[in-house]
View 1: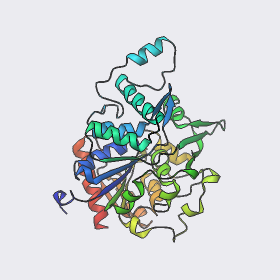
View 2: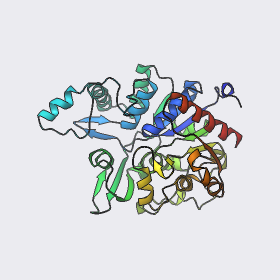
View 3: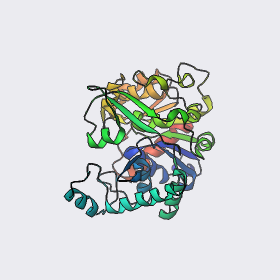
View 4: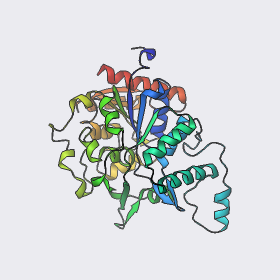
Length: 346
């Protein structure tokens, strides 16, 4: 199928962080942007300096608006840091860096939320402001917090403290998504999953970006997350057990493709490889495939991992090896085309 024949498909993407944003950028350069919906992780949302911050939503929004700092992969290009410099002089908290223009957006979001708006409404307003026609949906309007247990002390800490303050350099023994049991998918999310021609699970961190989305109860009915050894016991939902083959949705699985965030046993960015090992899963592309085996019919790995293709296909998935490193818009677009075509052919 030629790229020009793909443009009218309806694509839904599950995303979080830099890898997710790059994947989406490639897709909207292939598919008519208004026919693309991205469901974005909000488990790493936080409140700091009294401001409501949604890092993954902002990274996706800035990327689609062409405003992202491509070198860092987050934040705004041509940013200034006057507020942080002044706060540093006052000996305030500066471990979570916020640029001046970025702060303005967080102030805007905080003000809207304080007046009763939902996170979905904020996201829609920001997309309209930046001229984004892609549908950017938070996974839920309910508060959900990714919480990690430190292996050495047993202390529970929030995502941003782990990821930013501690530079994700400490081992963890457990991950849970606080508030997930009572959460529901944000408006439009379920329809985006059921009506899509293709669903793409982006090369984001499985535990920190994708499993929070899949663990929302009404989403898990459609895309059942796996039960892994270090999941909090109260989040071992029977309905999410991949061993329950009756729960697997064949129609949705058939149109779902997942992209590995691991290349040659390493994450390009972040702690995905270490977290896989700490959660009792091989830190390889095949290890990631084992997480998605009952969710996706196609799994995409990098050319460097072609030796794992047979092992992955033995899990019941079609496996495609290609270049998965998205170093620019063109490489992101090429990966998007490969992913969409593989899902359609499957």
